[in-house]
Image 1: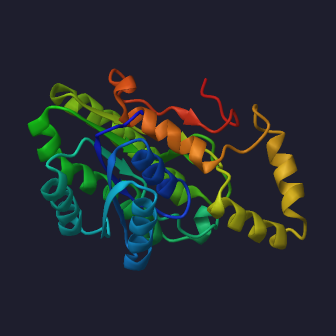
Image 2: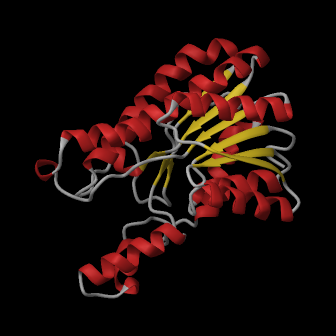
Image 3: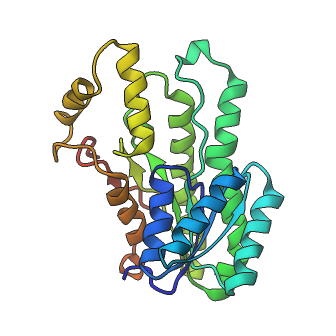
Length: 260
């Protein structure tokens, strides 16, 4: 079990990969604190993970608010006495429009959640991890940071900034045996993707199968990776198997993009 007995915060447990990380971490024996902005969703996920036998607590958090980030870390620490891992999965995408049609204000809002929100959470867990002299932080990034796509400028830029911050943090925090990585996720087969696929099919007056068929041709492994398989890559980075891996941005996309 990759993360057995570790205490892990998952900030941003939306219906895609974030919740899969929380579910699979708990199934692997970790104690998990799940967090998102919507109280009813957090409560539902706590019940679901607990009903499956997992050790779980939950709390609402808006990562734009430093005090809420601090409160989340304190809640986890007071419940389980330590914080071994942090997964930063909260993000704001922004409108799918060209740069010249958008506003810099919207870019700053995307950056505030997607990049600075993660950094607020890192600040919140640092005292505990430094005291323990061990910890693993996973800042979930995106293939969009290295392979731009139309309409994704603000999001891709925020993720690229997060990768730069990840390398800086890895350098600074290594002295405390705290590791920081930013896996780049590509398209992932799950609820969010299926919803996006339906919208794209309607927009281009085609079928979801037709769009997926063309995308599969671009992927070395021939299919979109499922959310749960991408979540396993995050669990690996949280685990002791990755204890000498820090400052990296591994590509998790089935071979759609391969760094040179």
